[in-house]
Length: 287
Image 1 (cartoon, rainbow, N blue to C red):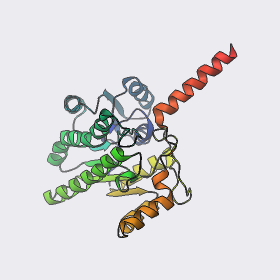
Image 2 (image 1 turned 180 degrees about the vertical axis):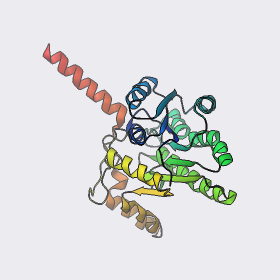
Image 3 (image 1 turned 120 degrees about the vertical axis):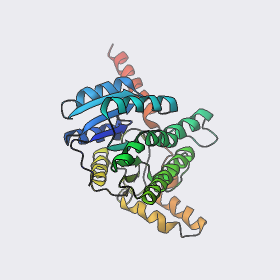
Image 4 (image 1 turned 30 degrees about the vertical axis):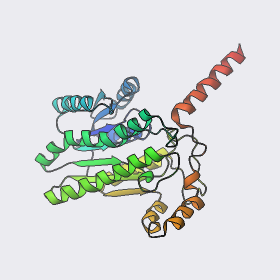
């Protein structure tokens, strides 16, 4: 069991979305929180809000695209708060563009944050876990790491890599006879704003998950040392579906609406801009 009380818990991408919700729930259980995020202002707001419930809250602005920045921030974290007990690799981004629409930097950024950062952060904190014989590495991947779909070629590829990262690390630790645990989380779309505009064809079978539900399930899975959490349960059928011939598999994804789920995607940045535009228009109209 990976209890949170009195543990050093580091969460990347902690200033918003699922990362922020996880931080709030873990803080309520008495953990010592370490928050990383590229958004320094949002990070400080989160730190102030969480300081009333957590044992301690330490925040570090860190660009996960920058390997040197990760190394420097990890060194500062180890110096300031000591070894990490639970590392939650949560930070993630999405461009929502087709392969030919995506800019080179879109693709590089997606892999830097969603995939390579997993390596750099885990390599920074795993040695101390191995030395102490205890620890937990949590990888927030995605159902997109199990099934590909259009307009998510870079994202799906990065999350497939994240799933492979967790699985290989788990087996490596097993070979070492280590007690360090791993958990991979593969949720369907979560309505945090990151995937604003996505649709699902069958809401009962493949619901767009609420942030509170997803955060509660993740907290419980880590506490119980579950190796894999997939949400909703229908996504588990992916492994069986892969036994089908490729045309049948692709047809099933079309029938379920998975391959068209991104057709109306706008994403957090576009959605936020639309809200700002409406607000400005409303203000001008009031004048």
